Length: 307
Image (tube, rainbow, N blue to C red):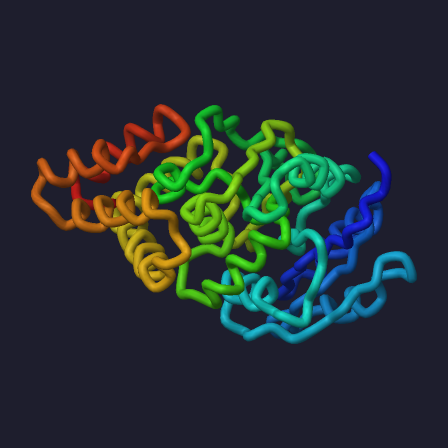
């Protein structure tokens, strides 16, 4: 691939990330066949994060540093993506502690460029999990079912650290504004799929996702992690998260397609209905997860009024 004429805005959010930040910045500087500008938003770091950012960048890869809203990673990312002073042909979220493959952006843009640029388009991919020292410890699951709004309502297929989007997708997020949602990446998948945009899922890993004690979410791999997530879900966490997502979507109902509005209405109304209404609501809305265990969890969550 030849170098793209469109600059990529890399939206990097940081908070006390000095321990692994240098490796991530090095991987950003080594991206091939793309022109990038790094927009870093720091949420009040007290370690050497700011110094690391000040010392980074190059004439070929400028780095613009700003102070974030100080309200957590989700709001920091939404603040960056909605910042009208940032302009580019493509936009990519970046975490502070990963290491990107050198062709991460060029691969994403190669697929996004094939889409109609008048429509929102989002790229996401698998990740490889690595230890603090960089040792590969696993891969994220392969998702084989098509991305859709009916899937996005109950399952986020794309980690924010893998996401790249076109201008139309970014403009959609700007129109929605800084909503109160559990996660910026899940919201991105929800809004773009709900608005009838194109969502591309790449089954090939595009980065090394570093696992450590301070991960905000962490990889959904390993028996203990999955058990912990099911415990949290059946404890009511997912129901509260869904409530926040539904509220944000309803505030932006005009951005959704008529079909997505119907699905959202069925989902919202069935969640608080009787057992039969809850179970039939999943079917009527066409909701589905990407894995057998995920769909089993969806059934039991509906059964127990935890969705």
